[in-house]
Image 1 (cartoon, one colour):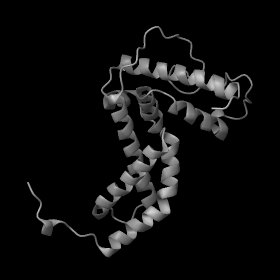
Image 2: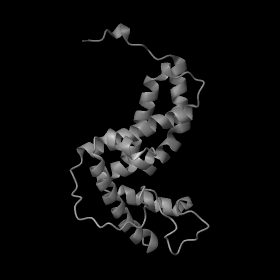
Image 3: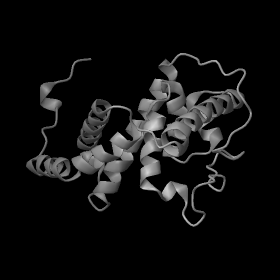
Image 4: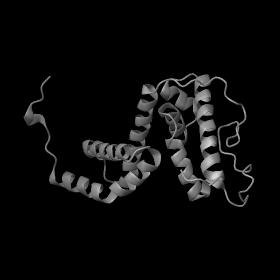
Length: 200
């Protein structure tokens, strides 16, 4: 069905002014956030652009009474989550048999263990260390796409495992196998680049 050009709504001067201000004010923080969650700067830039495009399209639905920055970050988080869901669906299946059971960095619930890091002060939580978080982010970006998708969706949105399982169309067993494989690879990466202090 063809659209009648007369039915296309022309953006108002106020709408254009507002969106231009949003782009000038929030591109840098949005891009910084996206680059911390994605493996490439190009993908981060694409998703930030898509965020503004979505905000522009939804301008009439935005009441103007809320926090515009929070709204834009919500849109961006959804874009990143959608990106990883697509990456997961397109990625080849990774074999998960024969994995070791020992896991030094995570507890049975999948959360970080910090009290086992023998050389790290008990007075400071490891995840409060900016340098560690930088290394962790880089290690996550080295994961294969489907493993990265599972880890990012789980911890990016802090969703329960059963929610991630539903969104990715996984069986619970396959989900935990993928999580375990991802955590083992993160363990190896962190062992080399954090505890041995080599450059990543």
